[in-house]
Every structure is written in structure tokens, then in C-alpha cells.
Amino acid sequence: MSLGLKQGFTATTIALIGVGTIGIGWAVVFATGGCRVRVYDYQPAMLKQFLAAVEFRLTKLAEAGLISEAPSTVLDRIVVSTSREDAIEGVDHVQESVTESVEVKRAVFTWLDAATPRHVTLASSTSTIPSSQFTADLPGRDRCLVVHPANPPYLLRVAEVVPSEYTSQATVEKTAELLSSVRISPVVVKSEIEGFVFNRLQGALLREAYFLVGEGVVTPRDVDTLVREGLGRRWSITGPFATSELNTRGGTAQHAEVIGAVYARIGSARGAGDPWSPQTIAYVMDEMNELLPGEDWDENVLRRELAMITLEGLRHQGNVPSVILEN
Image (tube, rainbow, N blue to C red; front, side, top):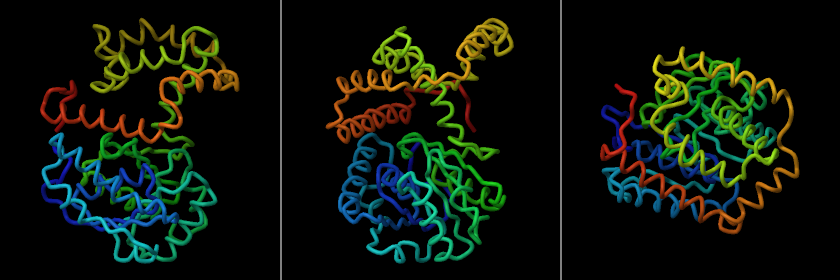
């Protein structure tokens, strides 16, 4: 499947506030999806490198056969604004991706709510903070919500749509429709919980991994090997529930009967303990720094994205099919 224009798509104008890693990813998503994109960041230095970062990713996507348009054509849809007022003029949706701070987000959303017409949806890319913590006192809180993407969003094409108790159903539906139109699968989270679903699932695995490392059962390097070469490869084809269905003849019921009690004992034994001790974190940091030196962080992030582009290119060619039949 191409990541580009979807048949019947109606052009939409998007404002992106914040152009770090997530903002760059959103720009690729919306621009390849046919949207007009306006970009602003409170740090001018970020804007200087933004277009080059987007162009590089578009070029790699084109080389992998994942977009049919020329990168320059897609890039022409993106306008970098030097003022926040210009960035939001005439937009249909605002996607905020600023620093992960309640105070900063509250300031941004207070301004957005006052400066944009009522029909504009206002979404935060926050990965952990419920939107009610920074929008509850706004007159337009009904049009505010979280749209938390997987990272990078232009390759992991799923996002959590997390309304607060104040968000209108119309806002949820409009936002989900927008995401679908740019080939992002929207997952509507039915309750506003800290960490949402994506990070709770990821956190559950990390929590057990830290326990195992802290107890000396396995090294951080070997945990990554097990997930990268085992669980991760399998989960890229089927999720955990579909994996349970296919792991044991008899499906989910048989799997639960055979191994459910084991998992229950593991959970009970863990209790409410905290595996994130300073000593264990330091151990993990040391081992990860040997594999992925901190001074090479930007380069390593880019290498990860390039590897994912290669894998997505194989999927596009039909060489990595899914077990789940999609409509």
C-alpha cells in the first residue's frame, strides 16, 4: 500500500506547532496525504533544519517505492511560518507537538483556543498527559483532545485518539476521519487514562524487563535480542491477542487454560514493587551506551527510521504479508 494520496481525499489545511521528531513525522504524514501543512516552532533554530529533515525522509520513501509523487511535489505543500499567527490562519486542524509539560501545553492551548475558529480541532501529540490537565478550563475544551502517534508516525501508521470528558463526539469522529484520510489507523481510547494504551502496553513489557535485569536473570542486551528477533517480529504480523489465538491449537481459550495460571502467578509474585531502581537504570544505561552511544543519538534514530523504511518497502511489495485480512 502506498503511503500517499487516498482516493477521494479532500484537501485539508493542517497547522503543526512544534517541529521536533514527532513534528517532522506529522509533516510527512499530512503532506504525503495531500494536506496543506503550515509549521511553526517557538525555537527558530528548529525551523532551520526542519525542511531538510522532511525532504530527506521523503526521498528515502520515494526510493523505497512508498510514495508515488516526487518529494519536491510533497514538499511544496509545506510552508514554514515565522509567526504562530500565520501558521494557524485558515487551518482545519492543529497538531501540537511541543515539550511534554502540562504548563507549556496549557499555554499553547489557551492561545490556540482563543485564536482559532470554533470548527478547528485542536490535538496534542502528548504521549502520557491527559488533555483535561491542560484544557479543562478552556471555553472550547469540547474541540480539544489527544492524538498520540506511534513514533515515527509516517512509518508506524497508527495513532491513539484520546478524548477527555469534555471532548465532543463530533470532535472525535472528525479527528478519526482526518487520520483515516491520511492513512493513519485511529484507535479511539474510551477512557482518559495516564499513559493511554500504547505506552501502558510498552510500559508493561519494560516493567518486567527491568525486573528481570535487576534480578540478574538476563542482561539488557539479551532482552533487546529476544524482543527484536522474537516477539517484535511476531508482533509485526499479529498482535498479542492474535498471537495467543495462533500459538496453541484451540485458540485463545486453550492458551488461557494452559498458560493463564502461570501469568497469574507471575503477576502476583511481582505485586506492586518498583523495578526502576537507580542501580538497575544505571546498568541498563551503561549497556545501551555501549551499543548506542549517546553522542550518536540523532544518527541512531535516523538509522532506525531507514531500517523501518526498508521493511515498509518490503511490505509494500507484498513480501511481508499480514495474517490478518484487512478490508
